[in-house]
Image (cartoon, rainbow, N blue to C red; front, side):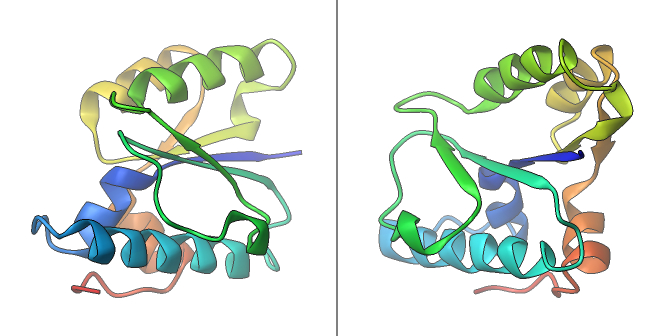
Length: 134
């Protein structure tokens, strides 16, 4: 089984061309991203987890098959690295895919053997989404 771990904050910021958005717009962009990841799962039947920095988003979680985690006042990077380290014990490293354009986070995940896909590539190739404002 393959595992997809997504740096959701990084991905939604790229979707919005790094513009700072009010919470309501940030929540809407997060919901769009999660919905697209769920749709892509029809092609890629993998375990999916998405991580967001800080506060919990106002998203109807029960409507998605993607597991959603929040940093609760902190960056989600530590959660992602700890999750990669945990999965490393039970899965082959090549089965763990991390989506982020954060170089430091990517380097830390690669230490455990995880494959790292840049957020821009994930949006345009895997999800077939243009990088535009939501």
